[in-house]
Length: 198
Ligand code: SF4
Image (cartoon, rainbow, N blue to C red):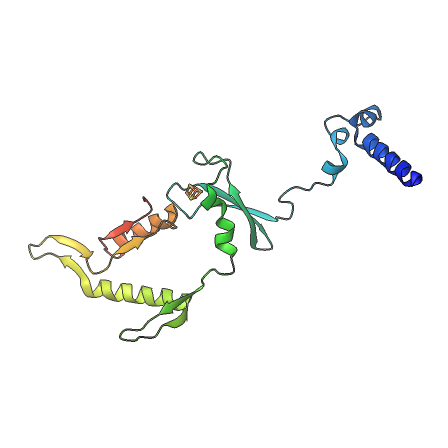
């Protein structure tokens, strides 16, 4: 019993001497580098050491448009944080923006759509690409059927009132820019709205 207590005390003394910076500074180590390390700090690793890529992004949640740094490993995002270079958020993110990684990687994320054909009472599961093609086809068809070049009084309008767009807060500013360009300038749509301001 005495032997165990004695060994434990010597271990503690040895650990104390090893972690004490003064002997290491006397041995020539700089107080700014090795001599300042404790056994705990020696075992610490950089938080994002595993990341092999870092890219930039704009938070998809709201119109504040906070900048994000996206860290990835082997093509998969492993961490999202605020970009300190942004004059808007200066490295911070609100709780929603800080949860962007979950938005992107959660297994419950929906990647299919439910489709109910006209006059049907049954929902069918369809791939996302199928839905995008169908939306594009119906948009083009409706636009062509309702496009007005000239009003009865001769005023040239080149617009359609047959189709509109209501964007969501998860659209970022680049996407909204493209939506406005494509829908107004390209298709002649007049009714373009977005709820990001709420
Ligand atoms: S949801 Fe939060 S982090 Fe994202 S843009 Fe808005 S304020 Fe910034």
